Length: 215
Image (cartoon, rainbow, N blue to C red; front, top):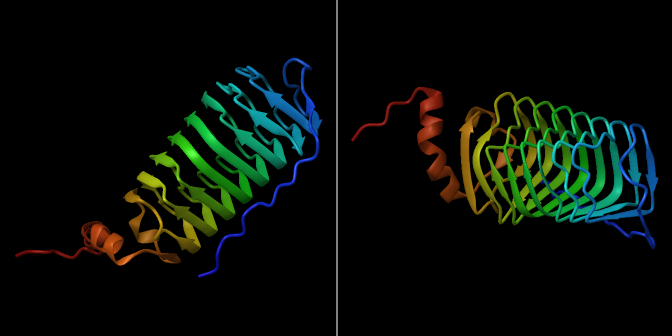
């Protein structure tokens, strides 16, 4: 089992962003967005390099195909944030409160998700490599058709996960505080679980294999 590589961020001195809303295909470098209300803004295709978004509101914010590189998102909150087909590389997402975030078709590499709660996270068809979920709550995350390589779940709660059609390689689930897979238990090849987790998954595995358990 190969361990995930975590991002190593060293942000430069940042300039406070006060330029108003986001722009499609905008270029943001070395900026700090602090307590900005970005609800409904359109930053599709934008590039964020060496940036920090702190305590920002991201309700229905459009960031599809955006590139977030060497950046920190801390305490962000929002519903329906659109990050479809976005690229996240060397990113830390901490203490976020997000619901219905769209990350389908996205690429995540060296990403740390620490703390917070993410409800109904859509990662269908995404590519996750060297991603760590730590101390967070994931409610009904959708990994359908996604590829997960060197992904770790550490002290996090995983509720109702959908792994339908997913491909797993070096995925470590042993550290999950709670593990609940709603669909796609047959896709766990390439993952490692603890003995206790295997016992909890046994009924679902038996059902998938058509094994009747009686007595």
